[in-house]
Length: 217
Image 1 (cartoon, rainbow, N blue to C red):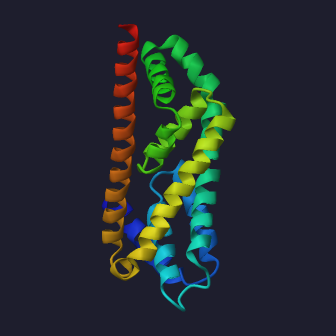
Image 2 (image 1 turned 30 degrees about the horizontal axis):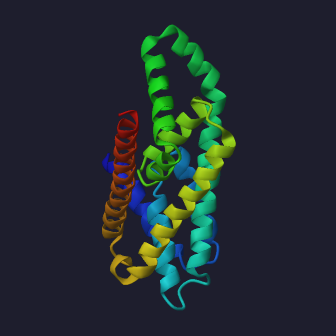
Image 3 (image 1 turned 180 degrees about the vertical axis):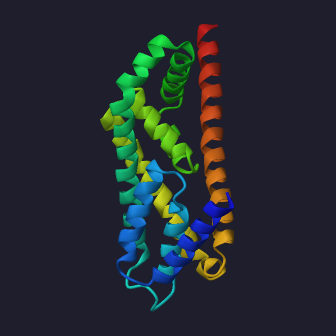
């Protein structure tokens, strides 16, 4: 655990040092892509660092718009790669589900959650480290429509990249030498977004159920 933490800290320090180069945009894209498949890669922190660099005059030869584009594009490609991995593995999982009841139940639960919560779940999951990988894989495993998936993921990744980049851009001086604070604030903001989306979904579900009852009466 400590070794992994040390590697991530070293990577974060390196990201900070090279954030003033134009090719840092490619780094943002690659890390955002990898984070969709390997959820230990610090994509939020990378986008925040890009936002910090963009906010500091003379440090970076790019502006925040390019940071958002790089982050969103990398995340979009990565999410679709994760979906394809799930899709390719779906037959294997289905064969296992036919033999093992617990696997069948998990597969059905994932399909039911996606059907019930719809595309908003893809937006919510993008703000949860690890959650995005599980859901994108599950979308492929349960054979969700690829056009539906790509549409919602495009929205989710733009929202995610925008919030992380703007966070770094707006509070650049506070985060410049304190990446731990940047991570904590980013995680807290992600939880707030997730809570807000789930609250809206819950209220909408309750109102729909109430309207259905009233109609039946």
